[in-house]
Image (cartoon, rainbow, N blue to C red; front, side):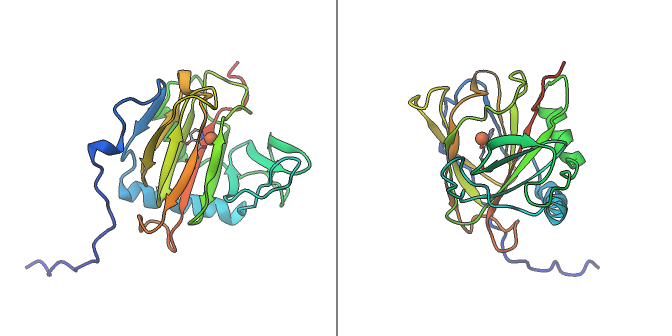
Length: 226
Ligand code: MD6
Ligand code: FE
């Protein structure tokens, strides 16, 4: 006879009502909800934790003012995005603090890129953003890359976040969507250079990351394909 199933405390899975995803999203913004199963999320998180062990999270700072970001960052891939007071936003092949090359992009992330984009080449940078409760990301455009044909692919892990995305002008109308653990989204085509950001994290909405918080991974092609 089968042993009785062990009772586990209920997983924190909130249902996604139709109202969560607005009927009209900006053209080129693609949201693949639940793209990663809970098992895939766990496996990916473990690989990201390995990356963080060799390339520790650092506190980026705004150019000129030196104001710290509320998120911590690190990278994997041949190039990593960094920012400091002295030299501002840029991609570079080595960690800002250790001076070591960034670790390689884990294979499951490259698989997501192959599945969800039809790009001629692979991403060169994966920016890892860690949001504690209370962190946010001001509205910005991803425009330090030199291959406008490549989208930016984003993966959300851990606590839910309220994401906004508008158009190429800061004043363009914005829509808001809740990004949940396992969601993948793309800023592609007409939305590639759209303003977007994170308004807030919803603490306690996921059990994936011990101690809570959110990790966002963005895969980018930095140099031209040809
Ligand atoms: C975040 N995401 O989800 C912030 N950038 O934490 C981004 O800044 C982002 O989701 C480019 C493309 C997709 C994104
Ligand atoms: Fe961005």
